[in-house]
Image (cartoon, rainbow, N blue to C red; front, side, top):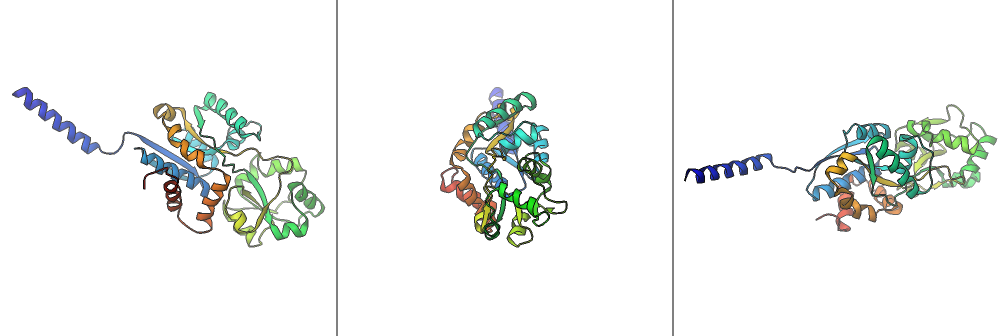
Length: 300
């Protein structure tokens, strides 16, 4: 009888402890950069992981360098990033235009040197682009970056450009473009501003040229033209998941869980999702959840 009472007591205590503990024993921190596409990717990942029993924390609004440091320091477990950024900015390698080759290269080096693994490469190519208002580009006869370079060399100081501090200083940003194409904006003609404000500055005629991202929904909405990168300077910026090897070892199912999302995404799809947030002014949460639900990626 005493043994039976002890067994019942232990069983009740175990149930109480389990109830008090609550929550999930699968915890993960997702990081994102400070622009719409990153917010959407992070939020969609959060919803999917929560649907699969994870407890998720989000760390958002980080620049590339800050997010990378957070990943290396294990303050962030997982993030969506771009293979071009990984190769050039984080690892100091030469840019590559083939996404699969870039993905394999960044994975090889990052695992060996930084204990970071890349998975779920997809067709979202958020490469940099130089944009102009279509009417201005047609008037000046500028269709490509080579055309832009020739015009600036012939008319120094006439065109101004909206950028951000990161693009203005990256090897795969403005300095590299100017070096490859043989031109240079005059001092004071490049105006650094917060990411995202450059689209409005171009739309409102405050500048004639702006850096942008190829998957941004505002390009079509604001009647911009992407100047052809006719010398293929900008590398592949296909999206992929970057996570610590510790996270991958603890949760080897992550790649499979995120595969359906990765397989549905491409640049056109991402532009539409970005458009819903940036132009239609819908919330990131609403757009992310609607997309996942409509594609059967989470429960209603």
